[in-house]
Image 1 (cartoon, rainbow, N blue to C red):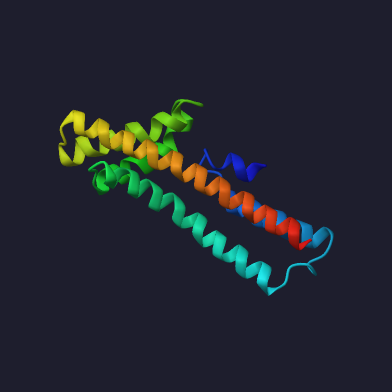
Image 2: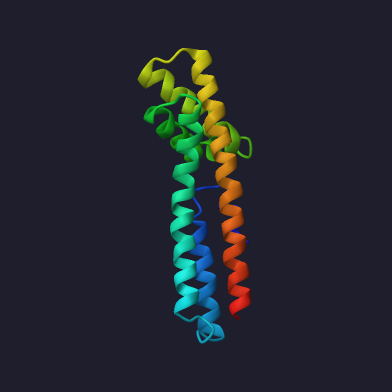
Length: 146
């Protein structure tokens, strides 16, 4: 359950909690069901999860004309937003961060910066959906192996 909270609060390392669940199952019950195929599949999904955040955010910002400043701003906003503005900061953080990054670093026109902010928001939502699906598949595979 904690792993799914990490989808919207990126400070919580979702994949670590999923792996911890697998290890706790092994410690308290048995590692026997976890053969090399299980760990290989899970390892590939872990790599996919780490890449999904960056690629989704980058795609969203770049697709709407943003630069590295927008990507960095969005990432910083995503990390800080939920703590500055609880609940709403999850959505507002990446948007404001991307807009601020573009305005400050590239002196982008405000209208274009807002468009890039929306791209960042789309990237974040896509990332949450992708990671949620991958995490659900990881847990399903775990259940199938035990």
